[in-house]
Each structure stands twice: as structure tokens, then as C-alpha cells.
Amino acid sequence: MNGGQASIRITDRTVSAINEVLAGRKAGGLSRLFLFAGPAVVASIAYMDPGNFATNLQAGAQYGYSLLWVVMAANVIAMLFQALSARLGIVTNRNLAEMCREHFPMPVVYAMWGVSEIAAMATDLAEFLGGAIGLSLLFHLPLIDGMVVTGVVTYAILLAEKQGFRPIELIIGGLVAAIALCYLVELFMVHVSWAAAAHGTFVPTLHSSEAVTVAVGIFGATVMPHAIYLHSGLTQNRAPARTDEGRRKLLRFSNREVVIALSVAGLVNMAMVVMASAAFHVGHPDIAEIETAYHMLTPLLGAGAAAVFLISLLASGVSSSVVGTMAGQMIMQGFVGFHIPVWLRRMVTMAPAFVVVALGVNATDALVYSQVVLSFALPVPMIALVIFTRRRDIMGAFATSRLVSAAAILGTVVILVLNVILILQTFGVSIPGLPSA
Image (cartoon, rainbow, N blue to C red; front, side, top):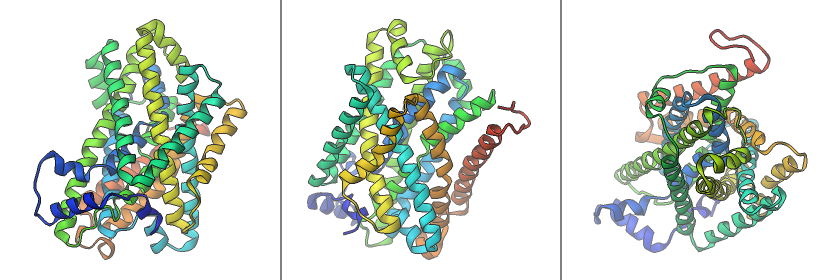
């Protein structure tokens, strides 16, 4: 059994029920939907990880509601690519990394693997630091101790996979619900200018070169390379369809789950920006660190708001760290067929976070810059996914239409253009309409 298959074990009873639905012998409402739910929920945690906290906090505090349109645009692109990733896994029974190894020249495969490993480390840096920051603030622990606790908790959750994949899905789903509930509560604790929020959501503006950097960070924190790889692995062989009609049913269920799960993730991200804007933009726009935001929430909104903020950060750090480890395993085995134990994988991806803390680097700055790194790695899986899902020799009747392919290409171009702008700004090159860095 390969790494992708090993990561998606479900019980024989569930498999039997899924086959009954695909064969048209079982109907039902929500109970039928729950049979197929899981992959998008697990992938969605990547869109609510601590990197999002850092970039959304900066966006709201420094630029108010004006970058909400970036969050929404990134979430729409994320929906499209997560749906395409799930589509690839359902139709081919292969994950994206495996498809790359099978269809690209080996030098390209190794280069893609290298970039993807860097992205995985940047991802784990953000997730691991987020959980550690939350623990250190909540229990007054040294940051290094918080990192150790986060690593232990993450590994304990990963052990639940021995009981099948459904326990992991339920744990991640519960943590997603906790994050969403926390930010729903936060919105009732701040005074929101909904008119300004609506304007920021639908009227694109970038006030400065620094705003471009934050915007690229938002894209890097929202559309995640490891989530694109992971989703295809979560759907491959999960509910193998023997007919085209069965695959169509699976795709319908998958697309619905993607829309629901990522809509929740998108709303949570927008709520993060709205909360930061309402709490900090007027009077405290210089707040750009998670620790400072936590300490300022108590005098501004009360201890309850600060506690809710920390609970959501903890839930985000732990759950996204679990998902990041799963994705790292899948990426490594898919690209090079090399399997290492989960505990060793966990140690390798934890190492950069320990180095950052040991060097005394500001934790929130590390979170934000890790998201910029992810944005540079993001075109790799996006381009590969566009190529594979439009090829009829691979996807058959399920190859994407010209309209969907065009939308996916446009999404990839948006990411590439933002990255080029960031590089030019970094080197002081003047861009019409934007001030130089």
C-alpha cells in the first residue's frame, strides 16, 4: 500500500455505505453527505493556520478593511485549485506528487520535490510557531517549551490514524469548528464598520509597496502548496468508483464539500482582518505581532477577547501542524518513493522553527516571511495541476473545460505577477501606480 493509500484508511462499513450510494442503492440527506465529507475539511485547516493569523493581523491593523478583497480573491482561487486537486485524485487514483513523478522528467521531479520540501518546512515553521506562541502566552511558558508541547500534542493526534482516518477527520473538524466559533464570538466583541468592510471586500486597492508585501503574504498564507498536494491524496482510493457515473457522483460530493469547507475558511480569514481592523487600525496601527495583539486585546476588549484569540490560535497551530506532517509524508513518498517514520518527519520539519527561536528572530516576522516563501513555491503545484487536469489522456471525460482551465491559468498568473511585483519592489524598482519600497 502506498503512502497516499495509507493516509486515507476508512472502515469497511463506511466503504460499503459509500459503494451503496455510488451504485444508487442508498439515498438520504445529510447522512449521505457525511459519508463523503472529510478531505476538504482536513485541507481547509491549511487556510486557517497561524500564518493566516500573522498576515491577517498585519493587514487589518495597518490597512484597515482595505485588503479584504485580497483575502476573498485568494479564497476563490483556493476553492478552484482544491477542487481540481480532489478531481485529480478521484479520477486517476493518484495524488499530484505521484502524477508528477510518472509524467515529468526526473530532473524536473527532483527540482519540484526540492521546492515542495522547502515549502513544507516554511509551512511547518508557521504552524509550529503559532501553537508555541499560543501555549507560551496562555500558560506563561518559554517559547521553546511551548514548541516542545506543540510537537508532543501533534504527534499524539497523528497516532490516532492507526484507528483509521475518520478519527483524524473528526479531530480536525472539531478544531476547525472551534476556530470558526472563536472568531464569530470576536466579531460580537468589536465595533465593526460594515460599510467600510464591504467597500474593502469589493473595491481592490493597494496603498503602498508594503501593502503589496502583505498581499503576497496573504496569498501565500491562503492558497497553500501542501494543501494542493494533500487534497489529491486524501481523495485517491478513498471511495474508488468503478464507473464514470460513480466518479461524477464523487465529484459532485467533493465540489460541494470544497465550497462549504473553504467558504467557512474564507469567512474566518475575513473575520480575522475585520477584528484586527476594528480593534487596532484606529489608534494602534503599528501592532503587527501576535504577542502584542494579545496583550492589547485585554485593555481594549477585555480578558475574554484575549482568551478567545489564544484558544483559536492554539487550535489552529495544533491542527495545521498535524495536516502539515501528513502532507509532508505524502509529498516525499509521491515524488521520490522514500518513506520515513512519522516521528522522524516531524523532527525534520520542526528543526527550522527551533533554529528561528534559538537565533532570537521575531516570531511574528518569521510567520509572515514564511508565508511569502510559500507564495513563491505555490506556482509549482498550481502549474502541474493545471497541466494534468486538462489532459484528456489522463483525465478522459473528466478533463477540465476550456473555461475552468482558463480560470485556473488566470489564478496561477495572478500569483506569478504578485511575486514578480514583490521581487521588483524588494530591489527598489519603480512600478507605475505603486510607490517604490
